[in-house]
Image (tube, rainbow, N blue to C red):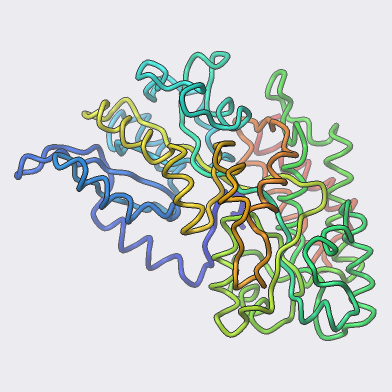
Length: 425
């Protein structure tokens, strides 16, 4: 089960979109017969840029933009970089996969050579820094959105359990993930026909993103999961949500989970900002006003991406200008207000208009304020060059516990062993 992507769509909707948009293929842009320069932008999922591409083309009449979605972009990009051909003019990589390409950073344009810095239109420092190498001298990628972290919850089911429904009071119920589990047990004692939370996989992603180091050591990029006592404790806390019947075990981003959200079989789900629209899609218009959003235990982040420009492009200047425009604070503010993607620019997520944003589907919860506060609690996270490779071992381990095939401690031990094989340690 492959899961550790920054933004995922529900499986039932993903395949057709990918096929339709990849039919035109990938590869660097070239001059069209009408004299325009075509720039190809390839991402793994929809970044919400479609209307922006049209706007950019109007303001830049010499530019034409071709959008491509590739389901397994990191794998294909490795091949394209090795062959020195086939890569797009601009590529989008999740914050969990960009580390995989840092050893090959010289195959990407150093955006610092084109005037990019973190002074003129600054990103939040930790997000900007993670897109750089050589101590910040080599700017490899420009940060798009960040996720923030919240908990979506069904107000109707919370009422049934005798729990508060106001976002502020709900957030106060669970200052820690252990308290979250305790609330889940209280819920299950009163509501027999619904699980408290959809699955432990989403919980785990939120948890691991609250650590400065996760699977790998920042000092030498060596696998350190088994030495990270805090990470292990979080894994056991998540796994025990299955044992204690708090989790429904609906696999992330599947029709089963979508149906659970729609039919009220799960009372909560982990929600970074970008996932609000996915939750609406899964739950359906009939459940508008039955959902709300509260702060997640301990704040944090899930998601976000970077735009990079491979050196293969024949249109470096134009590609850099497009990437810079798409990741600017002006555009990111519009993307949050229109699509809910939380900006990686402090000037945006601290903007009064953004902070005042509410979502009618989620009972007019103050989503702008909730997600901005979550980001303010963030600390820089180190992800190893093989982070996305070993993450699957831990997700699969949680799945085995949910299926009753392993106990939490045994699942952790096997996950570490499987990760060591993948990492080559």
